[in-house]
Every structure is written in C-alpha cells, then in structure tokens.
View 1 (cartoon, rainbow, N blue to C red):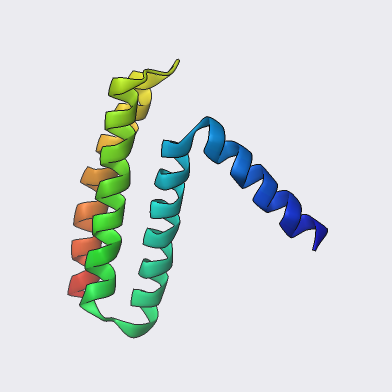
View 2 (cartoon, rainbow, N blue to C red):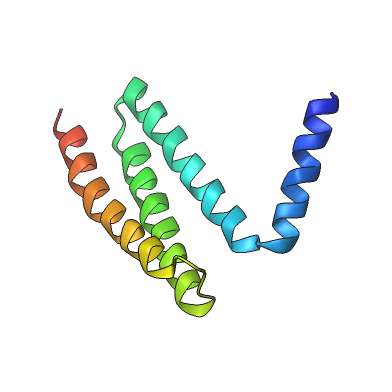
Length: 97
C-alpha cells in the first residue's frame, strides 16, 4: 500500500510540474496496451486506436517542444517524427498477418 501511495504522489507531482508529459505517457501506455490486446484478439479497432494514440502522442511531443523548447528540442522532435514513420508501416504489416 505504501508503494502505491508513493507512486500516486510522484505522479501528482510530475503532473503539477509537467502536465503534457503525463498526457504523452498515458497515451503511449494505452497504445502499448491496445497492441497487446490486438495481438491476442486480432481485432482491427484495437490496432487502429493504438496507431491513433501513437500519432497523437508524437504530435503532442512535437508541439510541446515547439512551444516550450527543452535542452534537446530538436532531438525530441526528430525522434517523435521517426516513431510515427516507423510505427505506421509496422502496424500495417501487423494488420496483414
């Protein structure tokens, strides 16, 4: 119980100081969860929703780094763009199998 309390406290503090990062993390976790569900059920809506969450999280990263640049803004934007271009064909290949 103590570990969960500490987890929620840490999550709350992170949400206060960097709310967009919480949203991005939740979207990426949901995308990963949906891919795992899709792997067991092979239902197209799970795969499509996972792709939408991934693209949305990457778009949030690009916008966040444009509005509030960090020390590695260009690197973060490049990685987010590469993820979108890698995930799209990968999900298409998964859909074909």
